[in-house]
Image 1 (cartoon, rainbow, N blue to C red):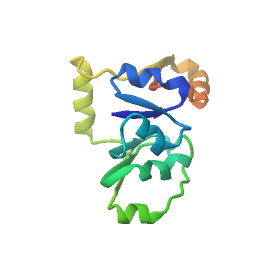
Image 2: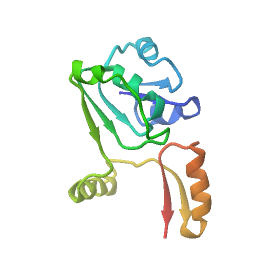
Image 3: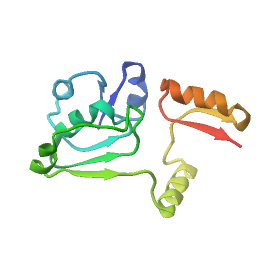
Image 4: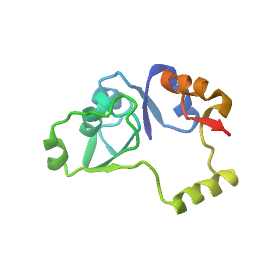
Length: 146
């Protein structure tokens, strides 16, 4: 698996087992070629924004693109011929089913899955948590505890 991340965030994907990490601001096809990859089967994107077209462009024919966030911007631009000529499938995902959630909680409880928690805040420090969120200088999730 390959992660695309800003330079300050390269260590975290490696720590969780990514095979390679390429720079977010790199020319994506060249950066992937440098680590021996020409195209990918699946893109999971939580950033969106200007990189959308580049991410679609590295998908193999019949590839799948899943978006679950848009912290770099919700408006994207692409050449739709990339989608239909390569027969790509685009998915939007904001949450799973209750059963999916229960399965993830079970895996966490059994120690088989370790969520990346970048910070914990008591509810009284919600404003501080929001400032941290806006800074985008973390990897993982921020937890607000009631």
